[in-house]
Image 1 (spheres, rainbow, N blue to C red):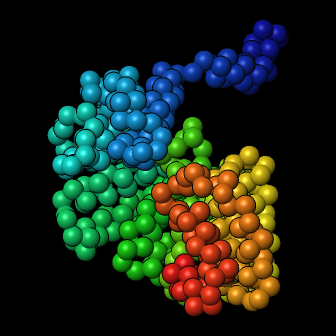
Image 2 (cartoon, rainbow, N blue to C red):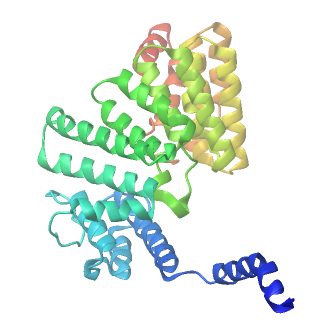
Image 3 (spheres, rainbow, N blue to C red):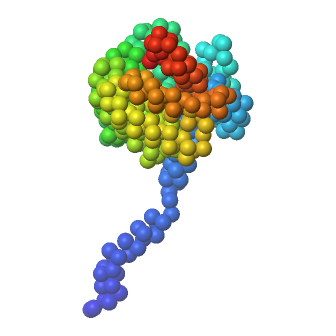
Length: 368
């Protein structure tokens, strides 16, 4: 006997399975919900860690009181979860041995176990690598006063971390370990720092403030470090290439200012390519005007003047006098502490040109 119901049941079973799969996939499992919640929690706590590293006891960014408020708001001190305990351990290590400056309001906890780290890695590998690298460096700095001793312990541990990241199949995570390795090697072996940076470079992401812990050491910074390393190795043409890449990264992903042109200008000067250096300094001046910044305009004048001093032709001295004709309006302009006292230098250089040849030579000796 023909059984149409049975026939339909068999015939449409694959479609029924597909329908059920679609229905159930529309509803996330408890595991997926937990994973998403932990990822978001880790992202927020990672951003907190990054804020602490770069702003605690710093004159820039948030104050210590503001950061303390963020820590209290995060409830990290009362968080007994695995992720919370690991984050708290890292935060504690960052200022554990501070004696002359304030420590973070974080109480110490017991040691972090391998299973704790494994749990964190399963949430987000790149962020885990950044967090653990920071933990390694903080612990080493706290335990060993001498740099040589610190590096003996931090570098092997960072290599293990890089190997672990490679085994996950995520090259971006390995790149994070590599750039931390490069930072340590910069004090010990510039060539090895170059190797790690060149390895990391293709996989590094632009800085993203929403994911700041794993992107703070970004492609722009890697190019800048490579440029510095190549200068120390006296390979200025390669340094120039990376300074140019770093500038392009800023143009694409950040707010451009006159200070960003420093590396490119200095590299062109070292290569005696003065016309290109002047072209870059002119661009820096234009950017400073677009930013309506007297500080940046003063700095761009300082860049231009130093190029002319280095080339030092009769025409260049006339150019310097023209550039420094109206210096008085910059007298009270304050540049960042890490930048030369541009107004004082420019005033001295102008006075030297107007004065005797001996005064001019002495000024060049002091400022070039």
